[in-house]
Length: 467
Image (cartoon, rainbow, N blue to C red):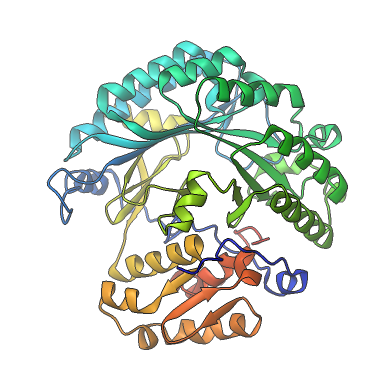
């Protein structure tokens, strides 16, 4: 492992040349490749075969994901699967059905029920009342064993959370949080319909430290209407004073055909492509000057954070929640639209409440689609993981693990990588493919060279720009 892989060079000319539409690779193959022939029966089968080929009789530890789709108000930039409501009768019913889904999934599950990682995402998980949060965690513990050293995280909307809520979350077992901010500028907040004061955010982060949370992350978005390099840097100054352990700085993916709320945005107010590059480049330098290190894509962390340590030690992994330190866990997912990973398979639930409830009323798992990975998929997934997490790939390790001759198997891919090599993004020799500091913001482009599905389907407009 090279010792400078967290180094980053921001080269606007290189980025302009190679900034194309592409997947984020929270999985490979990506979710748009899932098929409806992989159904509830197929998923049940794999729950029952979990220990097949495992290192021990009990199987791998588990990761759990719960999708909470409800939000009080709509943020115009949002492309998540969500339901805008103020009716807690709907969320109380939803939790009952999450309990039903846990009962059905665990009835088919073979092996241990030890959980090393849990995440509540959304929507807005903190839409739930205190009693609803308690009930969901109670149901979870009835079905699973949450290990004492596990990573238990939740997405927080500071507008709906006070010190007492953070205290409760700590008592329920949560030890990490992701705090949605996007931008502190009042004009930008007004434009995207998310008014959130600095004080509301500070209260949540200070409470997290008071009640023993191990890690606090702040989410920002660049490319929103009315943003400038100066205004975004001022937001960063405020954020740096809050001193989060991790920072996620996402590119705003403007896809109004796919995300209806984005149609309410004024496109004329959005930064141009060149302006976005200036915003991003100055923001990256700002974060590095403040002591944060580059993890990958849009993630930064303090050097002593677990993600940064895992990357230095070669243990970093990428899954549907982003970067993670738990590569070995099977992921069981619950709720509408949630995506799980069991052995060599993926599955995704139905996206609407009506379909989700109908399946569970019939005692059927609400699986809409999924995929059983081929040997080639598993090989390419391991390569994309290495490039996205570690910025380098040992050719010999791939050959030994998958019993192939790399140069002949990936002759077409190596030809495609040659252009990236000439552009200064990668270096290739007999033993290694390395993503160079100049190419690290574009690691997705390097990974795309190994995506067999993109080779036969160049319709990439459904993906966001890489930068």
